[in-house]
View 1 (cartoon, rainbow, N blue to C red):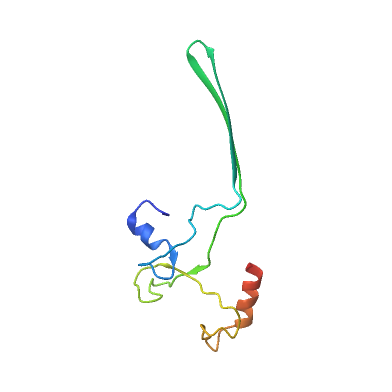
View 2: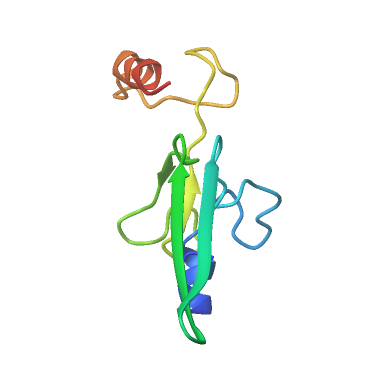
Length: 116
């Protein structure tokens, strides 16, 4: 869930098929997360309880995915501005991809190499 309304939650997910999102890593999954809490409690002034708490958190990164959406919200005829997952081909000869003749493959794969 990324928002406070059902419409926003429905359209603010990164999926291939928004009607069948399948299993995925949670937006709130944080790898290599360490948290700690130390608390002290005492009654220094009669029956008035005093509490002192120290909390710390350390983590490495957040999960992310490359996504795209069409300016008119109709990338695949779904008429909703979904964030579609970007398919990253395994190379220039990937059989799942047909490149437009004007597409700069070298620049694309240079970008992918830097991102990884």
